[in-house]
Length: 338
Ligand SMILES: [Zn+2]
Image: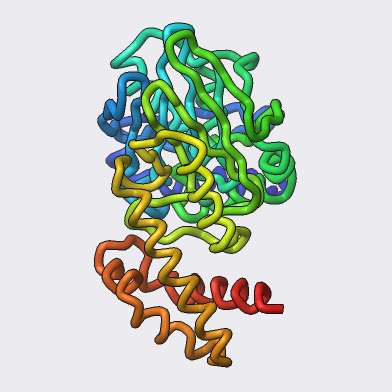
């Protein structure tokens, strides 16, 4: 027998299932869409569903980064519950996380999910699409920006699925890529009777294709990863200035009072937390570039800024990521100079 990648994954998943969890929940053989089988990873422990406003609910991820222990539960799943149906904004990092979020949703309403929205192409925001399609039908539309869809359909999609398996020691095994099928852009709206979803897109912020979703009846804005609460973002495909500009436009073009990030708590405070951190980092880098300070000395300058340094202790992923984070900001500042 040739060892295929799929076989290897299944073996890892089987090895990762401890005797205890095996007894508590027998892993099921899972048809992966072809003649092969993979072992489906175990269920994810229930997280409480929070009511954020009259129509908006959230299942919050306690952690900021994926581990074998949290099974990839690292980003929030948000539900907009209207008279005519429920829309899910970002579906989590695995089929198991989606199934857990659906259990929570069903504890508060019998209304079915009628649409799915993926804010951008990072896997913790869409790898759970499969769970919702399996629960509510393959005809449930999945909306995203066209660029997000193309990334998920391509190498980015498989790379995220495989990375999530590795980071969680195969706890997300059984998760299939279900890409978005409907392209949407700035200004698109979805009506749910007593609640509306209005989409905002302002160019490159966290990625080139972020969508923020406003629920105007509730003064709520789901921002995906354009803003985060006490967590460092992956800014490899993003822009600091672009994020600051997008934030300005989200403020100018809505009456938002509750900002709902995909990482951390929702509320009024998210805005200032994110904006002051990014201003502190980016403005310090612009200053460093203007003064001819080399890249390797930029981190020290950034860390002198109180808007940055005061956040170190409370921010998930700080020590591992702040150096890289500042390099990206410095390179952007350098490019903006020329
Ligand atoms: Zn992201």
